[in-house]
Amino acid sequence: MILTIEDEKDVRRLIRRSLEALGHEVIEAVDAKEGQQLLVQKRPDLVLLDLGLPDQDGQAVIRAIREWNEVPIIVLSARDQEMEKVEALENGADDYLTKPFSAMELSARIGVALRHAARRAGVTQQVLQAEDLTLDLESRRVVLAGNDIHLTPIEYRLLATLMRHQGKVLTHSQLIREIWGRHAPDGGQGLRIHTQHLREKLFDNPLSPRFIFTEPGIGYRFRAAD
Ligand code: CA
Image (cartoon, rainbow, N blue to C red):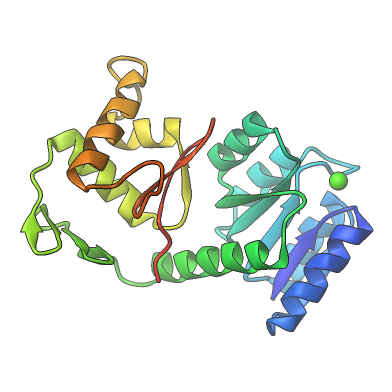
């Protein structure tokens, strides 16, 4: 069951039509108050949350939900609101969709978020895999097309973090925190350089990536699991 919290009727209708066609049950709220009530009462599997709600700031809604609930949240945001998207991800949203979005994008993002939530609930994987790339978290071995890839400790942590969250966008500061702890030694300038080196070692062309996708102004996303 998917909960849509959105005050625009047309957007709600598009979401309902697309998701019901895929066999999802959809429930709807027109403001934050109703949304939070339905979340408590119905326990949906995923929340689609508009950031511009009439009664409460969407960011505050995310923080309120995250105080007690791990449900995947995908925010619906207007174009050119990179700061809003970054803030939403840092507050605990799982992903975002930029309006106007297509039914295909919607179902793809929902699929990723649901799979990710299922993995989070299950056992932790020891070997992460994407196409012909594998990363063994125990032996710290990275193999691409049968060949060992030698990574620096920073590159290894960067790749492990990205692969643990396949399909999910990670903001620059989320990555920096995962790799260096609270603060990056150089204020995060190095992240771009390390990503570039990692891409070179994975033969991953940023212009047509197989593995690491740039989300301009936001961060990076590893390819979604098949
Ligand atoms: Ca709105």
